[in-house]
Amino acid sequence: MYNYVKYFFLQIYGFLLFKKRVGVFGLFKVGNIKNVKIGDNCAINPGVYISARNDVQIGDNVILSINCMLLDSSLDVSLYVQSCPKVPYLNSSTLIKDNVWIGAGAIILPGVTIEKFSIVAAGSVVTKNVPAYTVVAGNPAKIIKKLKEKN
Image (cartoon, rainbow, N blue to C red; front, side, top):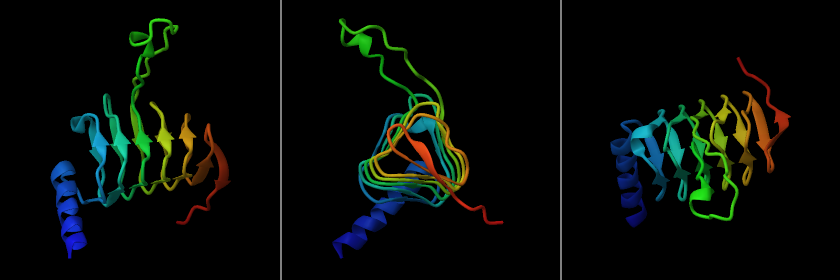
């Protein structure tokens, strides 16, 4: 009974937070909720982190698996470590289009666009844009398969 009540309240939480039909399946973190736009029928699993300092857009029917990260900015480490040379600060929108599945532990770096019907494998680090209908994997993520388009 407890699990059904928990699930019910998580779904209400997703609707109240995003004003859309979003499945929330556990605790997740968002840097600034005002900078996140999320589509309908998405799933956010436990441990997801969305930095949202600038702008993060998530399309319809997107699955964010356990412990994945969507980043739209970087941290200027030279502010904290004086011996480190100045590292450029990245601040760019991150866009996840419709029908994308992001695997567990994947990291999407600032400025990346993942086009529709793409899959990011678990543990991948996505540094460049991902074309539509592709599967990417690795660190850095590379295209490992092209998916067939269905009309």
